[in-house]
Amino acid sequence: MVDENYYDKLLKKRETIVKKYKAIVYQSYVDFGHPQIIVIYDNNLHLDLYIIKEVAVKGRDYIKALYDPNNLLKNYQKEGRIDDDNLIIEHLSDVIYTFHELDIAIKRKDDLWAMRLISHMMADLSLVLCTMYEFDKPVLHMKGIYHKLPETLKLKVDDILEVMTPIHIGCCINKVINLVDEIISSQTTQVKEQLDTMYLTYIKTEVFKSEKGL
Image (cartoon, rainbow, N blue to C red):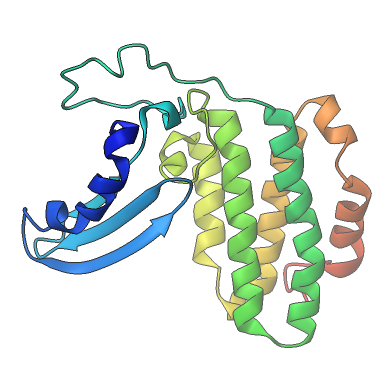
């Protein structure tokens, strides 16, 4: 965090700063709202260096200030999550539609794209599970959510991961459908009413009818 008057100057010194620790074996630049330099050192330590202005600090997670002599972060508070229902509806709707894309990919024998689509679906489902089992996180995320799941759900996720291969794709799809059903059944009536469950029923009864799948 830097005073706005010194912001541009410090941006120019980023490379000098990150090189002071050890030799760098990987370096890249990204900008997700704040300029960031990513480096990996020759001991495999990974560093993300953000340069931000004080006014840009968002309360999106817990933070630990290692050095704050002027107490700039003394009033920092983590925000609560907003519009969980809308996020759940968005991600579950994406999953339901992706079954349609998946059917097309399989019929075209496009195994690479089909497996990528299943990966997308699991990512969306992970974000929904975050709203259910990671209550204290203000921003939905996938990292670490597996370890917060009940054992029964972990086993279902493990079962899916074990068959996420082209040769077992029919079995994999049906396990994903079962997981989607379980997640939807645990949602509020308000969420359920805004999901296209009619299409999900069509998928189960007309598109992917058996464990063999296709």
